[in-house]
Image (cartoon, rainbow, N blue to C red; front, side, top):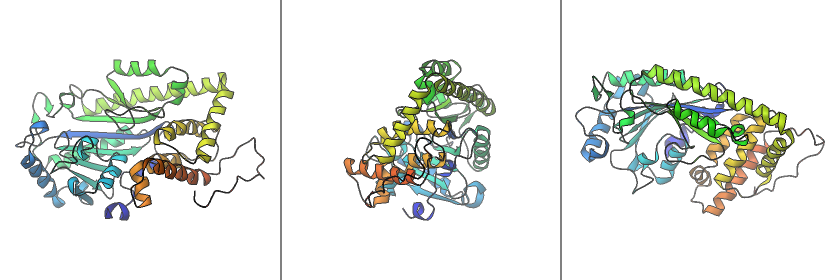
Amino acid sequence: MDELRTIPDFGLGWLDASGDHSDVVLSTRARLARNLQGHAFGPRARVNDRKAVLHRIEDLGGKVPALNETTTRELHEVPLRVRRILLERRLVSRDLVGENGDGPQVGTAVVLSHRDPISVMVNEEDHLRLQTLLSGLRLQEAWARLDSLDEELGRELPYAYHHEFGFLTSCPTNVGTGLRASVLVHLPALVLTKEIGKVLQGLSQVGLTFRGLYGEGSEVVGNFFQLSNQTTLGKSEEDLVDHLDKIVRQVITYEMQARQVLLRDAAGVTEDKIWRAYGLLRHARSLSFEELMNLMSGVRLGASLKLLPGLRVYSLNKVMIFTQTAHLEEAAGRELPAAECDTHRAAYVRRILATEGVINPDVDPSEDDPPEHSGG
Protein backbone atom coordinates (compact mmCIF):
# COMPACT_ATOMS: atom_id res chain seq x y z
CA MET A 1 0.00 0.00 0.00
CA ASP A 2 1.75 3.10 -1.24
CA GLU A 3 0.01 5.35 1.27
CA LEU A 4 1.28 3.37 4.24
CA ARG A 5 4.84 3.57 2.93
CA THR A 6 4.84 7.27 2.06
CA ILE A 7 2.77 8.31 5.08
CA PRO A 8 3.61 5.60 7.62
CA ASP A 9 1.92 7.23 10.61
CA PHE A 10 -1.75 6.73 9.67
CA GLY A 11 -3.38 6.01 13.01
CA LEU A 12 -0.12 6.16 14.96
CA GLY A 13 -0.21 9.69 16.39
CA TRP A 14 -1.40 8.41 19.78
CA LEU A 15 1.84 6.45 20.29
CA ASP A 16 3.73 9.58 21.41
CA ALA A 17 2.25 9.38 24.94
CA SER A 18 1.76 13.16 24.97
CA GLY A 19 -1.68 13.27 26.59
CA ASP A 20 -2.70 13.48 30.23
CA HIS A 21 -2.13 10.36 32.38
CA SER A 22 -0.54 8.60 29.40
CA ASP A 23 1.06 5.97 31.64
CA VAL A 24 -2.45 4.76 32.56
CA VAL A 25 -4.58 5.98 29.65
CA LEU A 26 -3.08 4.87 26.35
CA SER A 27 -5.54 6.61 24.06
CA THR A 28 -8.84 8.44 23.74
CA ARG A 29 -11.21 7.75 20.88
CA ALA A 30 -14.45 9.47 19.93
CA ARG A 31 -16.79 8.15 17.25
CA LEU A 32 -20.01 9.44 15.69
CA ALA A 33 -22.51 7.27 13.81
CA ARG A 34 -24.34 9.03 10.95
CA ASN A 35 -26.68 7.95 8.16
CA LEU A 36 -27.91 9.76 5.06
CA GLN A 37 -31.50 10.38 4.08
CA GLY A 38 -32.76 8.60 0.98
CA HIS A 39 -30.57 5.50 1.35
CA ALA A 40 -31.30 2.30 3.24
CA PHE A 41 -28.89 1.67 6.07
CA GLY A 42 -28.01 -1.21 8.35
CA PRO A 43 -28.96 -4.73 7.22
CA ARG A 44 -31.37 -3.28 4.61
CA ALA A 45 -28.62 -1.50 2.68
CA ARG A 46 -27.84 -3.01 -0.71
CA VAL A 47 -24.91 -2.54 -3.07
CA ASN A 48 -26.57 0.43 -4.80
CA ASP A 49 -27.15 2.16 -1.45
CA ARG A 50 -23.53 1.65 -0.38
CA LYS A 51 -22.16 2.85 -3.72
CA ALA A 52 -24.39 5.93 -3.65
CA VAL A 53 -23.19 6.85 -0.15
CA LEU A 54 -19.55 6.34 -1.10
CA HIS A 55 -19.96 8.49 -4.22
CA ARG A 56 -21.45 11.28 -2.12
CA ILE A 57 -18.38 11.21 0.12
CA GLU A 58 -16.00 11.15 -2.84
CA ASP A 59 -17.87 14.04 -4.51
CA LEU A 60 -17.41 16.35 -1.54
CA GLY A 61 -14.09 17.50 -3.01
CA GLY A 62 -12.94 20.76 -1.45
CA LYS A 63 -16.30 21.46 0.18
CA VAL A 64 -15.20 19.98 3.53
CA PRO A 65 -11.88 21.48 4.69
CA ALA A 66 -11.28 18.69 7.22
CA LEU A 67 -11.20 16.20 4.34
CA ASN A 68 -8.95 18.20 2.02
CA GLU A 69 -5.83 16.16 2.73
CA THR A 70 -7.21 12.65 2.87
CA THR A 71 -6.93 9.31 1.13
CA THR A 72 -10.05 7.25 0.42
CA ARG A 73 -9.61 3.53 -0.11
CA GLU A 74 -12.42 1.21 -1.18
CA LEU A 75 -11.70 -1.82 0.92
CA HIS A 76 -12.50 -4.61 -1.52
CA GLU A 77 -9.67 -3.19 -3.66
CA VAL A 78 -7.18 -3.19 -0.76
CA PRO A 79 -4.92 -6.25 -0.18
CA LEU A 80 -5.79 -8.44 2.79
CA ARG A 81 -2.60 -7.64 4.73
CA VAL A 82 -3.18 -3.91 4.41
CA ARG A 83 -6.78 -4.27 5.61
CA ARG A 84 -5.45 -6.09 8.66
CA ILE A 85 -2.87 -3.38 9.27
CA LEU A 86 -5.68 -0.82 9.29
CA LEU A 87 -7.57 -3.06 11.71
CA GLU A 88 -4.54 -3.42 13.98
CA ARG A 89 -4.25 0.37 14.05
CA ARG A 90 -7.94 0.64 15.04
CA LEU A 91 -8.73 2.68 11.93
CA VAL A 92 -11.33 0.18 10.73
CA SER A 93 -13.54 -2.41 12.41
CA ARG A 94 -13.79 -6.16 11.91
CA ASP A 95 -17.22 -5.68 10.36
CA LEU A 96 -15.96 -3.11 7.85
CA VAL A 97 -13.11 -5.28 6.57
CA GLY A 98 -15.22 -8.44 6.61
CA GLU A 99 -13.04 -10.37 9.03
CA ASN A 100 -15.99 -12.55 10.02
CA GLY A 101 -17.16 -13.35 6.48
CA ASP A 102 -16.01 -13.27 2.86
CA GLY A 103 -14.15 -9.98 3.00
CA PRO A 104 -15.36 -6.39 2.66
CA GLN A 105 -18.58 -5.63 0.83
CA VAL A 106 -18.60 -3.53 -2.33
CA GLY A 107 -18.94 0.14 -1.40
CA THR A 108 -17.22 -0.10 1.98
CA ALA A 109 -14.29 2.28 2.38
CA VAL A 110 -12.10 4.20 4.79
CA VAL A 111 -11.12 7.86 4.59
CA LEU A 112 -7.73 8.57 6.20
CA SER A 113 -6.43 12.04 7.00
CA HIS A 114 -2.81 12.89 6.17
CA ARG A 115 -2.86 15.79 8.58
CA ASP A 116 -5.18 15.19 11.53
CA PRO A 117 -5.94 12.18 13.75
CA ILE A 118 -9.31 11.62 12.09
CA SER A 119 -10.76 8.93 9.87
CA VAL A 120 -14.14 7.95 8.46
CA MET A 121 -15.46 4.43 7.98
CA VAL A 122 -17.94 4.36 5.10
CA ASN A 123 -20.77 1.80 5.02
CA GLU A 124 -20.02 -0.17 8.13
CA GLU A 125 -23.05 -0.70 10.41
CA ASP A 126 -24.01 2.89 9.58
CA HIS A 127 -23.29 4.92 6.46
CA LEU A 128 -20.61 6.94 8.23
CA ARG A 129 -18.53 6.36 11.34
CA LEU A 130 -16.50 9.51 12.02
CA GLN A 131 -13.70 8.96 14.50
CA THR A 132 -10.63 10.50 16.07
CA LEU A 133 -7.86 8.87 18.11
CA LEU A 134 -5.60 10.83 20.49
CA SER A 135 -2.91 10.07 23.05
CA GLY A 136 -3.74 9.95 26.76
CA LEU A 137 -6.90 11.30 28.39
CA ARG A 138 -8.16 14.02 26.02
CA LEU A 139 -11.89 13.51 25.77
CA GLN A 140 -12.83 17.16 25.33
CA GLU A 141 -10.26 17.65 22.57
CA ALA A 142 -11.34 14.45 20.83
CA TRP A 143 -14.96 15.56 20.90
CA ALA A 144 -14.10 19.08 19.68
CA ARG A 145 -12.24 17.66 16.66
CA LEU A 146 -15.06 15.27 15.88
CA ASP A 147 -17.76 17.92 16.33
CA SER A 148 -15.97 20.18 13.85
CA LEU A 149 -15.79 17.42 11.24
CA ASP A 150 -19.44 16.51 11.85
CA GLU A 151 -20.59 20.11 11.36
CA GLU A 152 -18.64 20.45 8.11
CA LEU A 153 -20.10 17.22 6.75
CA GLY A 154 -23.60 18.07 8.01
CA ARG A 155 -23.62 21.24 5.91
CA GLU A 156 -23.11 19.17 2.76
CA LEU A 157 -24.89 15.89 3.53
CA PRO A 158 -28.56 15.25 4.49
CA TYR A 159 -28.23 13.38 7.76
CA ALA A 160 -31.04 11.06 8.83
CA TYR A 161 -32.48 12.91 11.83
CA HIS A 162 -35.70 12.73 13.84
CA HIS A 163 -36.90 15.76 15.77
CA GLU A 164 -37.73 13.63 18.81
CA PHE A 165 -35.12 10.85 18.77
CA GLY A 166 -32.15 12.66 17.26
CA PHE A 167 -29.75 11.05 14.77
CA LEU A 168 -31.06 7.74 13.44
CA THR A 169 -28.73 4.76 13.49
CA SER A 170 -28.79 1.07 12.65
CA CYS A 171 -28.39 0.02 16.28
CA PRO A 172 -30.94 1.46 18.76
CA THR A 173 -28.24 2.01 21.40
CA ASN A 174 -26.61 4.63 19.14
CA VAL A 175 -29.80 6.60 18.42
CA GLY A 176 -29.71 10.16 19.73
CA THR A 177 -26.29 11.71 19.59
CA GLY A 178 -24.67 8.74 17.85
CA LEU A 179 -21.63 9.39 20.02
CA ARG A 180 -19.43 6.64 21.44
CA ALA A 181 -16.46 7.98 23.38
CA SER A 182 -13.92 5.60 24.86
CA VAL A 183 -10.56 5.46 26.58
CA LEU A 184 -8.09 2.57 26.54
CA VAL A 185 -6.77 2.19 30.09
CA HIS A 186 -4.19 -0.03 31.76
CA LEU A 187 -5.39 -1.24 35.18
CA PRO A 188 -2.90 -3.86 36.43
CA ALA A 189 -2.94 -2.82 40.10
CA LEU A 190 -6.73 -3.06 40.35
CA VAL A 191 -6.46 -6.55 38.88
CA LEU A 192 -3.62 -7.61 41.20
CA THR A 193 -5.41 -6.26 44.29
CA LYS A 194 -8.63 -7.96 43.13
CA GLU A 195 -10.52 -4.66 43.15
CA ILE A 196 -11.23 -4.67 39.41
CA GLY A 197 -14.58 -6.46 39.77
CA LYS A 198 -15.99 -3.72 41.99
CA VAL A 199 -14.78 -1.02 39.62
CA LEU A 200 -16.24 -2.66 36.51
CA GLN A 201 -19.53 -3.31 38.30
CA GLY A 202 -19.60 0.33 39.33
CA LEU A 203 -19.16 1.40 35.70
CA SER A 204 -22.34 -0.37 34.62
CA GLN A 205 -24.26 1.36 37.38
CA VAL A 206 -23.34 4.80 36.04
CA GLY A 207 -24.09 4.11 32.37
CA LEU A 208 -20.65 3.02 31.18
CA THR A 209 -19.37 -0.26 29.79
CA PHE A 210 -16.02 -1.93 29.11
CA ARG A 211 -14.56 -3.96 26.26
CA GLY A 212 -11.24 -5.46 25.24
CA LEU A 213 -8.35 -4.04 23.24
CA TYR A 214 -10.17 -4.15 19.90
CA GLY A 215 -13.54 -2.98 21.14
CA GLU A 216 -16.85 -4.82 20.98
CA GLY A 217 -16.53 -8.59 21.01
CA SER A 218 -12.83 -8.64 21.91
CA GLU A 219 -11.33 -10.13 25.05
CA VAL A 220 -9.43 -8.24 27.72
CA VAL A 221 -5.71 -9.10 27.56
CA GLY A 222 -2.79 -7.58 29.44
CA ASN A 223 -5.12 -5.72 31.84
CA PHE A 224 -6.09 -3.27 29.07
CA PHE A 225 -9.73 -2.14 29.14
CA GLN A 226 -11.74 0.12 26.85
CA LEU A 227 -14.17 2.18 28.91
CA SER A 228 -17.00 3.93 27.07
CA ASN A 229 -20.49 5.37 27.35
CA GLN A 230 -23.22 2.78 26.99
CA THR A 231 -26.14 4.88 25.73
CA THR A 232 -26.44 7.99 23.58
CA LEU A 233 -30.12 8.93 23.91
CA GLY A 234 -31.43 11.63 26.22
CA LYS A 235 -28.17 13.47 26.88
CA SER A 236 -26.12 15.99 24.92
CA GLU A 237 -22.71 15.11 23.51
CA GLU A 238 -21.07 17.46 25.99
CA ASP A 239 -22.84 15.78 28.91
CA LEU A 240 -21.77 12.32 27.73
CA VAL A 241 -18.14 13.42 27.34
CA ASP A 242 -18.07 15.20 30.71
CA HIS A 243 -19.59 12.20 32.45
CA LEU A 244 -17.10 9.76 30.93
CA ASP A 245 -14.20 12.07 31.74
CA LYS A 246 -15.30 12.34 35.37
CA ILE A 247 -15.65 8.58 35.81
CA VAL A 248 -12.38 7.78 34.04
CA ARG A 249 -10.54 10.18 36.33
CA GLN A 250 -12.06 8.34 39.31
CA VAL A 251 -10.88 5.01 37.86
CA ILE A 252 -7.38 6.46 37.41
CA THR A 253 -7.41 7.54 41.07
CA TYR A 254 -8.44 4.02 42.14
CA GLU A 255 -5.67 2.52 40.01
CA MET A 256 -3.02 4.84 41.43
CA GLN A 257 -4.20 4.07 44.97
CA ALA A 258 -3.99 0.34 44.22
CA ARG A 259 -0.43 0.81 42.93
CA GLN A 260 0.53 2.42 46.22
CA VAL A 261 -1.04 -0.52 48.07
CA LEU A 262 1.14 -2.90 46.06
CA LEU A 263 4.27 -0.92 46.89
CA ARG A 264 3.33 -0.77 50.56
CA ASP A 265 2.03 -4.29 51.17
CA ALA A 266 3.66 -6.40 48.46
CA ALA A 267 6.73 -4.49 47.31
CA GLY A 268 8.94 -7.52 46.89
CA VAL A 269 6.38 -9.55 44.98
CA THR A 270 5.50 -6.58 42.77
CA GLU A 271 9.11 -5.76 41.95
CA ASP A 272 9.83 -9.43 41.21
CA LYS A 273 6.83 -9.64 38.86
CA ILE A 274 7.95 -6.51 37.01
CA TRP A 275 11.58 -7.57 36.58
CA ARG A 276 10.59 -11.10 35.57
CA ALA A 277 8.33 -9.66 32.86
CA TYR A 278 11.07 -7.34 31.66
CA GLY A 279 13.66 -10.14 31.66
CA LEU A 280 11.44 -12.44 29.62
CA LEU A 281 10.70 -9.74 27.05
CA ARG A 282 14.33 -8.66 26.92
CA HIS A 283 15.59 -12.15 26.10
CA ALA A 284 12.68 -14.26 24.77
CA ARG A 285 13.13 -15.90 21.37
CA SER A 286 9.44 -16.63 20.77
CA LEU A 287 6.35 -14.75 21.92
CA SER A 288 2.68 -15.07 21.09
CA PHE A 289 0.81 -11.76 21.02
CA GLU A 290 -1.27 -12.68 24.07
CA GLU A 291 1.87 -13.65 25.99
CA LEU A 292 3.52 -10.40 24.95
CA MET A 293 0.58 -8.29 26.12
CA ASN A 294 0.46 -10.01 29.50
CA LEU A 295 4.18 -9.46 30.02
CA MET A 296 3.89 -5.89 28.74
CA SER A 297 1.38 -5.22 31.51
CA GLY A 298 4.06 -5.84 34.13
CA VAL A 299 6.64 -3.80 32.23
CA ARG A 300 4.26 -0.84 31.82
CA LEU A 301 3.53 -0.98 35.52
CA GLY A 302 7.25 -0.97 36.25
CA ALA A 303 7.84 2.03 34.00
CA SER A 304 5.01 3.97 35.66
CA LEU A 305 6.29 3.16 39.16
CA LYS A 306 9.86 4.16 38.17
CA LEU A 307 11.04 0.63 38.92
CA LEU A 308 12.27 0.38 35.31
CA PRO A 309 13.90 3.80 34.91
CA GLY A 310 14.74 4.84 31.37
CA LEU A 311 11.88 2.94 29.75
CA ARG A 312 9.68 5.24 27.67
CA VAL A 313 5.92 4.85 27.36
CA TYR A 314 6.30 5.74 23.66
CA SER A 315 8.40 2.63 23.07
CA LEU A 316 5.90 0.43 24.90
CA ASN A 317 3.05 1.86 22.82
CA LYS A 318 5.05 1.21 19.67
CA VAL A 319 5.58 -2.43 20.63
CA MET A 320 1.81 -2.91 20.99
CA ILE A 321 1.22 -1.91 17.37
CA PHE A 322 4.22 -3.24 15.48
CA THR A 323 4.23 -6.71 17.04
CA GLN A 324 0.80 -7.53 15.64
CA THR A 325 0.76 -10.13 12.91
CA ALA A 326 0.03 -7.97 9.85
CA HIS A 327 2.66 -5.39 10.86
CA LEU A 328 5.26 -8.13 11.32
CA GLU A 329 4.38 -9.59 7.91
CA GLU A 330 4.61 -6.15 6.30
CA ALA A 331 8.09 -5.69 7.80
CA ALA A 332 9.13 -9.16 6.61
CA GLY A 333 7.60 -8.62 3.18
CA ARG A 334 5.84 -11.99 3.24
CA GLU A 335 3.30 -14.12 5.05
CA LEU A 336 4.61 -15.60 8.30
CA PRO A 337 3.53 -18.97 9.72
CA ALA A 338 2.42 -18.71 13.35
CA ALA A 339 5.65 -20.08 14.84
CA GLU A 340 7.81 -17.82 12.70
CA CYS A 341 5.59 -14.84 13.52
CA ASP A 342 6.23 -15.49 17.22
CA THR A 343 9.97 -15.50 16.51
CA HIS A 344 9.80 -12.19 14.62
CA ARG A 345 7.70 -10.70 17.43
CA ALA A 346 10.26 -11.62 20.07
CA ALA A 347 13.11 -10.25 17.94
CA TYR A 348 11.32 -6.93 17.48
CA VAL A 349 10.73 -6.61 21.23
CA ARG A 350 14.38 -7.35 21.99
CA ARG A 351 15.53 -4.68 19.54
CA ILE A 352 13.23 -2.05 21.04
CA LEU A 353 14.13 -2.82 24.65
CA ALA A 354 17.83 -2.92 23.83
CA THR A 355 17.64 0.77 22.87
CA GLU A 356 15.90 1.89 26.05
CA GLY A 357 18.78 1.80 28.51
CA VAL A 358 16.87 0.51 31.54
CA ILE A 359 18.94 0.97 34.69
CA ASN A 360 18.92 -1.96 37.11
CA PRO A 361 20.00 -0.64 40.54
CA ASP A 362 21.10 -4.16 41.55
CA VAL A 363 23.56 -4.61 38.66
CA ASP A 364 27.03 -3.13 38.40
CA PRO A 365 26.79 -0.54 35.58
CA SER A 366 30.17 -1.71 34.28
CA GLU A 367 28.64 -5.07 33.40
CA ASP A 368 27.36 -5.29 29.85
CA ASP A 369 24.52 -7.45 28.65
CA PRO A 370 25.55 -10.29 26.36
CA PRO A 371 25.59 -9.13 22.73
CA GLU A 372 22.49 -9.86 20.68
CA HIS A 373 22.81 -12.59 18.05
CA SER A 374 23.13 -11.00 14.62
CA GLY A 375 20.00 -12.79 13.43
CA GLY A 376 17.87 -11.47 16.34
